[in-house]
Length: 212
Ligand code: FE
Image 1: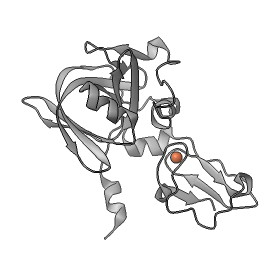
Image 2 (image 1 turned 60 degrees about the vertical axis):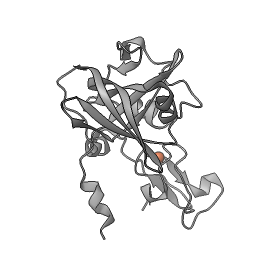
Image 3 (image 1 turned 90 degrees about the vertical axis):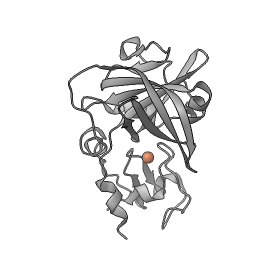
Image 4 (image 1 turned 60 degrees about the horizontal axis):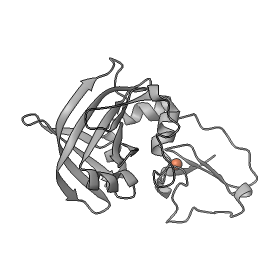
């Protein structure tokens, strides 16, 4: 079985946002799709480790902002590589870069081309992830810039890896570019431990490669 087959799936990229009381949170997902047109329903799948997953279970509504090709890496850093449990991702965000929709939840206006507001009508436990089936309550197009695909992000938005000079082994995260230089970090890894996760984006060992 060829593990790389799943890389042939086409994925979009989205900021999924919701709220808890007066505070907001969001994360980046690549698993959103329209599932029926009448009624207009979408499905999203969210890792249970994301704080946003927990908040949507309580709030039952969310916004989905469609990331476009003019998005910059800081959008991914803000929503993809930090946890809302530790930081308020909207606190230092410019008021010009998001707006509140009718449901009181923010959607992103910079580096995005559309948004959808939805309320959850079904929650499906998938083990590591939760799938939410939701009815669209509002939506709008924000720009005509094409949507960014997952492969577009890798080719054009993610910073190109800098070659690190090291006496030891250098492991690079293919998702966010995080570098583990074992000569610097103090723990030399002949091989990364199996339970290794990227400290920045939380992706597993399989997303790391050894710098040549
Ligand atoms: Fe990473």
